[in-house]
Image 1 (cartoon, rainbow, N blue to C red):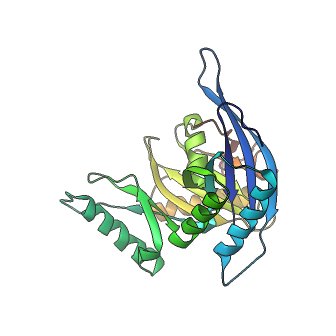
Image 2 (image 1 turned 30 degrees about the vertical axis):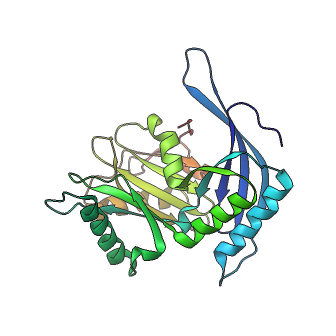
Length: 265
């Protein structure tokens, strides 16, 4: 498969399927960089409760072997179900990276009931304000790197699906709005800070079958109560958004929802 100037592959990895897109990135005169994605192939994953990451690797080998993608740079996006994200408050007087890493590890353990030893943790480390950390299973990373080496690909980035969606959408956020990303039957919800400059909390929420605008409003109100903040004025969502969410709302009791287009990072 021939590669044009500025092209790369984006591989979306989920627990049930992998999807490969060819992304074309260009810069128009007087304009910011733009990108267009073309889906090349999708491969279902044979379920394996005992070896789920091996199943993902085998699906990738099958799809990449057909595409003959040797030499391509690759950005890998991981389904939120495969990763973990959590908010960390730095300890008072934190002066070293080890202090922040220990705080992130303790918070991880309190939330998930296990040590983070089996997870590769990265974060926007800060000693002065709360920050978010993300964890990816080390075994999954090893499987992805092995496939990339076998297929002669160059991995340029690996990130959770929510992080990828947020980075490509946040410039379109309105003040007072929360952000959501929908994929299959999962809503990953981000409650933004009051100043709109950052994220206060991230929650993956399963979407019940047939969930409409009433469910969405009740969910947003509940999450606001749990966080002890005001409910959002608007939810801006991208991904596979249910059509019933994007419609005029005649009642002030409902929180409006608007589709948010992804932009190049």
